[in-house]
Length: 351
Image (cartoon, rainbow, N blue to C red; front, side, top):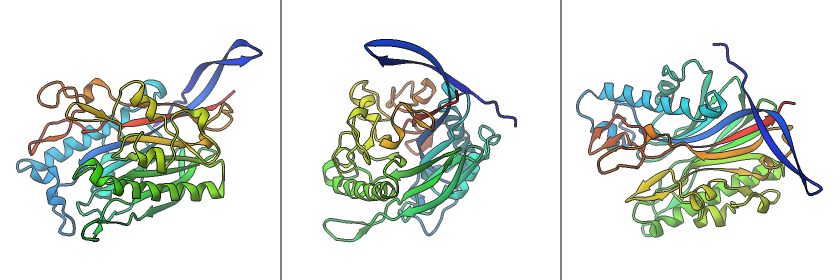
């Protein structure tokens, strides 16, 4: 397929000597997104995993057809993220709740994505249910240099037994001429209650901070994106305290992180997932100081958002107004996910 080169034209106001001057500038733009694809499991029972607890295995009739529809629905969403601005599919997408590499292969081979030169980074996590994180990327614009899976070691407070959960995936590579580091996360859930499970997510945050600090030690201006389903809001201690993610760009110092999702939740009231009519923004894309600033000679942060197009929202029933989930009461709804995707745009000046 011949890809068209799309350039974003932005009018930027510069403040100089108390006067505003208006300049038209051209930018290249890429979407970097995260999507919890809600139990993207295959139809085969793996004896080494507790995958029989997945909603896919609850389907007793025509499971293969359901799987194909689930794949098609997920691919449609991924293809659509950022299209209204960039006119192309995302360059990079972190994903969570995938069972194995094959379901991701099936995903990128769907007709909505098969014309894009997508490839995969995936490692098996020790999560008991068998759910993993992964990353897909457009090989025409992003080229991995190194990948690594970081094991999260946490233990039950009472029994001291290990809790097997998702690893954290680090992918370092070149977005055209820029070295970018992507960390994909799916932190422990709030099962048992937010307070009772908090320490597990705080452990995940400490591991994430350790990875980020190691990258900053090599380059204080490293361009880092940590994304995922954190199972915490931007204001929780795991994000605000341990990661130290700032709400305002002007407060971010060298080697620190900026969380554009906090204003989206607190100022605009927009979330990515909902429970009992309360909105949360567990799905976040957090960036380092190296991606901030007004020097767009290399890729920098432009804008963040929640991808919540109308077709992704439940129109009726118990979950009306919430993300249109794929599974409900052991049945396939022909929906998408119980989470909306989130994304950022990265831009680079071309003239």
